Length: 101
Image (cartoon, one colour):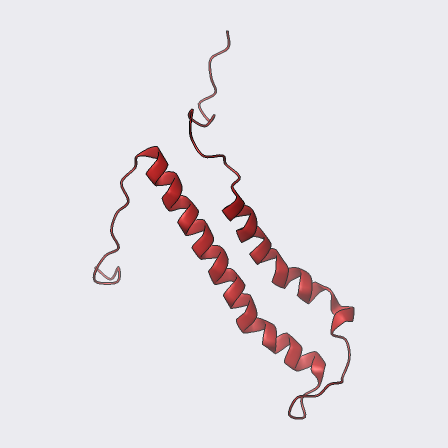
């Protein structure tokens, strides 16, 4: 009988690929795909305050991409907390000084 791999998940451990991690990956993929699909925004109209669509649409995606990235971060962080809790690893509290010690 072969011995179990040292990298194999423990019995009862959550799967390596969870729904939260897939959703986080999609959150990171959306802004990349949208910005690489140039024909969708390669036009001048409608202008916004005299700025052609091509420019303001790209600038609009800067904060939108930040929201997607932040959402992905929170999803992975929550998934890690669930994994630690299911493995019995204590979760350390956040430092009160904001980590500047």
